[in-house]
Image 1 (cartoon, rainbow over the protein chains, first blue to last red):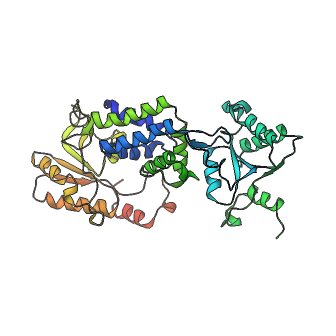
Image 2 (cartoon, rainbow over the protein chains, first blue to last red):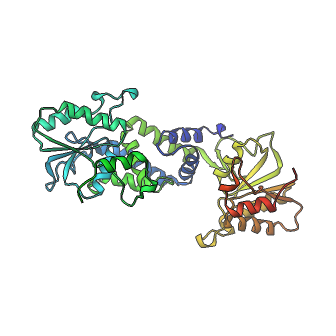
Image 3 (tube, rainbow over the protein chains, first blue to last red):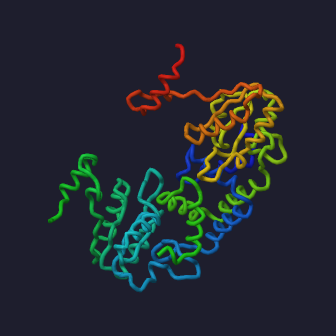
Length: 199
Length: 199
């Protein structure tokens, strides 16, 4: 019966494109927007439109920044510009930065290599990363997801940087904090064992 | 570092209010809106604003309808206006209607009684339901969630309708289709047993 309401259908169609809003959640979120009053809806729309007006990608690290300000990562005086942490996307950058344990700068690739999805090296900011390394950088940290795509991307970039004077490291693999051996999958335990560290 | 971008902070604050978008998902959705181009963002906003302009609550069943059209449930010629299915909210109505197994009309209460959250009978469309019953209706189906609030709402409405000539029924309780006894909680099994049906 909902087919008879073009406004509701248009809403559902828009929400379907938003990640994490599949099937059941869709209607919960639809109800949220139906329940908002006109003023609150206008405010929500203003915030979205402001993104397009005031936010852009940093031309150095390809994270998001305010248009009229310097990038909060690249221009931070406390951050070591000699250490670049390479991440697949902005969300991974946020996750790493929230730990508070990293004080270098970042490089957002914009995804991982995935030929099947049509994502080759030219779709990512790999060239720009190589250029940054050539300008001078002491260490590159690969902080990719533990997926075939993440590993392929790491291998590809390492190959591109062969012969360049830069140390490359990657995130440690092993047991998550608080995990029990019993509940963990075999491959993780195997990696934790083979990549064991001195105590 | 994200604190330095007021546009991004405003976006996160808006998304935090959307149900199902807690903590981690927040950034996935934020990235979705950051990645949208200006045209797509405008379209999304237009759809939201159209809701306020073209959608309103039906004054009969309190579901949503297009302003210039009749309610797709109340005005459907095939639906039996003598049978009213009472639901807590619009999402429950959609879930019921999707089954295709119900051909009566609906009544959306707008929630369930919950004194602790400040939701009393006056916050719901209970008076309007009683008025509908008084205008004539043969059966009322309570399709509430299996929660204390849902059950309290059912009891309250039943009390309000005492003495009125209307049959009241409620959804069957028991084992979900495809479920195994082993995996089901004790109370569900007890209810399925005590409310068993002839085979």
